[in-house]
Length: 250
Image (cartoon, rainbow, N blue to C red; front, side, top):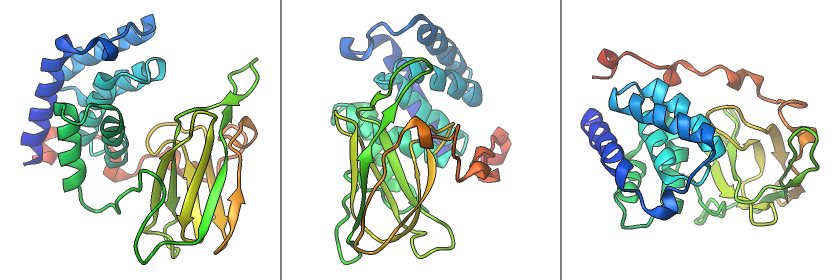
């Protein structure tokens, strides 16, 4: 079933490559064009790991490209990179037209996935388990030699720590146009706050929030992973996220 789904999804990627809408095929930087072209070759050859490598590089230069994000989500399903697939399909859901084939595929995959608590797109859960705590701040970043600037529409993840009462908690949101973010109505406890579930994040912080507390925490170069990394072990992929041969997935 998963193989049939993935083949159908990759076929959609290849078919839609040449007929992307103008708003989705704006000319990216030359390096992104090269990586995107190499990714298409790898996709055609079903070389998922190689395609994923080029897609990640292309996304860094052209972060608003639907084809790149959708293709990376498909690759992640083949490579058992569950968190990356979730992240990229959620990006597709947030940016693709709701009636597009990409959005429909993403919606089906996210609806059928198992073993992961549902994310809260607005980081504001509902129901009897709603908490009374919050975490808020501003996301600022600066490349070498530049002044920090607010990071708009940056996706942030708040993940409950294993072996703690918050282990099943999972929240996700995007910063606003001024770089501000706020996780609302969350359960008090211990979390990992990061901007990437798969790949190299800018931030990877251990956060403890008390019941009823609104914790102020700005994300800046001063508490980025180059200065402070509270989860260095996450750099090594667990066995479940390593590339397996095709025969192991059949």
